[in-house]
Each structure stands twice: as C-alpha cells, then as structure tokens.
Length: 420
Image 1 (tube, rainbow, N blue to C red):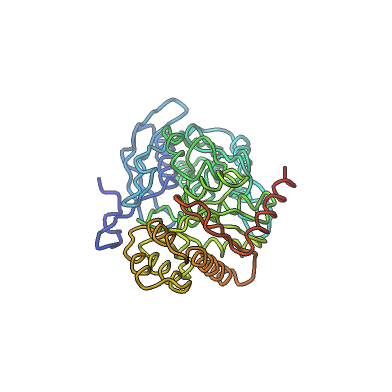
Image 2: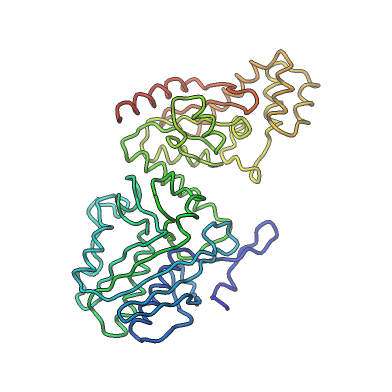
C-alpha cells in the first residue's frame, strides 16, 4: 500500500534511501483512526495524516478492536532506510470519551516549569483553555511506553516519554475528528507499544532515565534516512539530564569500550559518563553552551589519535589518518623512517602501538600525541571550560593524560561526594 512517501528519498553512497515516519506520527495516526471509528462506528482501513513536515501520509490501520465506549487500533512503524530499531513496531492508540475535567487532569501530568518548554520558564499552557468549543484531549501511556525517572528531559519525572510535538500531533488529529462530529467534551487517548520495553534496551533510553519502554518522538513526523540529528540530539539530552542534577563537570566516553575502561580503572560507574560516539566537537560545543565548568574524555587511542590532528568527528567515513598521525608523532619524537613506514603499514592503532613500543621513542611519542589532543580540545573549547582526556588502548592500558586530567578527576569526585 502506498503511504505518500514514494517520492521522498535521498541519495547516499550512490544508494537511494527512502524516508519513513516517526513513532509520533504512528501514535497520532492511530489516535485519529480510533477516534474516527469511535464516532462513526465502522472500521477504517486507512487513515490520512499531515505531520509537521508537510508530507501527507496514508497509513494502514491494523488490529482494530471496537467496544461500546472505546476503540483501539495500531499503526506499524516504518523508519524507511534509516537504521531504526523501532521500525516494525506496532504503535497502538485506544480512545474513549470522558468529561472535560478528566481530560484536563490527564494533561497536567506533562505540565512543568522546565525551560525546555518555553523561554520564559513558565508552566506550559493548556492548549484548550481559550477554546471551550474544542474537545479537551488527555493523553496517557500504557505498556511499552517509557516513563521519565530522572530530571532534565522534556517531560517531568513520572510522566510518560511522549514528547511535546507528538502530543500536539495527537491532540490536533483527535480534535479534527471531534470537531467534524460536533463533540467538545473530553477524550482520553492511551498510547501503548507492546514490544516497546524489549526494544528500548537497544536505545539510549535506559541511560537517560527513561524506564519501561520506548519514547514517542519526532519533531517533523518524518524520518530522514541516515540522519545524524537524532544521535546528536540524544547526546545533548543526556548531557542536559546530567547537568540538571547540578553537575558542573562531566565524564565523556566515545563508546562502550570507553565506558568499560572507565568503570574498570576509575572510581566511576559506566552510567556516570555520557557516551558521545564520534561527535567530539559537538559534545564540547554543547558543554560550552550549557555553561559547564569542565569535561573529561576517557577515550581509546583509535578514536582520539584523530583528535591529535584536529579531527572533531572521528567517524571513519569523515576522516581516518590514524596511522599517519601516529607515524608523524613518532617522527617528531625522533623515530627513523623505517619505523614510521612500519606504523603506516599497520592495520589497527593497537598494531601500530606494538611496533612503536619496541623502539626507544615510545614515551616521547605518547607525550606528543597527548599534547596534540589537549591542544585541539582546548582550541575547540576556546577557553570556555576546563577540558582534558585520558587515552588508553585495549592491549596496553593507559597511554597518557592531558595536563588538566588530574584536576578534572578530582573535581568530578568532589562533585559526586557533595551530591551524595
């Protein structure tokens, strides 16, 4: 069945990558279909939805259950050609009528004074307050939709992990049906994802303090394939979440290996660090914009040897130069051309380190690499925060610490003791 996205795609690496639609669009479409069937008392095979992106969708309505006062149905998530673990999930909406007061009480769960909602810091306004002729839509969550357990996210602690734009999409979609049928009372919409809890274990949610399921997300309603926006946004959210607890210093590790090394060699648990993936520069920018005092990277040399060359996105598709940078540092430390060529021929950074370890230039080379990493980290931070790194390899352990690493470790420990 055509869904309206057939003409939307990007070309990446000479491949045609198709668009998809978000969990937020699924929830809104399911809610709209369920509301329509509740009023019209007949099944609806396809529902039309216009998400914020402006691309009109026609989505198949699945697993319809009709009762006297309630209708439930599902929309199947399709992330297009984006590597999205939520693709294929059924997102359900169950709709029932209630009075306006009950619906308004359900809205209160999402209201708080976080500045993420508006610049004034005031509580998010009830959208129906000035429209008594419009139905009041209250949104709840069932199984498989996560709950917020830590501060710093868009919703307050205890609220379902249904972001603001999807809530607005659900509300507007249901109100459209209510207005069509002249209904201006209350209406409850319950969103659930039966496979959400299992799927959430493959996402950032547990690290962000979102427990029990996935998040209902999306700012445009449309998934653009291979987009880096979602991952970068999740890093910023995690940093904000940790900073909201009063932290001024953050630990950062590029990946799971860094988290494992951190918990095995420092007095910190892996979940105390932010995982920044390849986005070293972006992470520093976020830290500066949040007004943090300092960040300490604990990083594998395979990633951070690139930072020694000023490379702030360490993904291999953007830049490599690992062996070139290691060889150049060895030459600067006094190594001969034969050693440099052996390093250049190495396949992995660890292999290059084994070659270097057999020479008298090992310590000087590691010092040069560490100094260069420090230089480029400080260059990106522009003096706006204290920044440092601990470098290690899987086979040789710790390789070096930048000048501010010890101070940052002390501040991190003191800050944790103060908060506990």
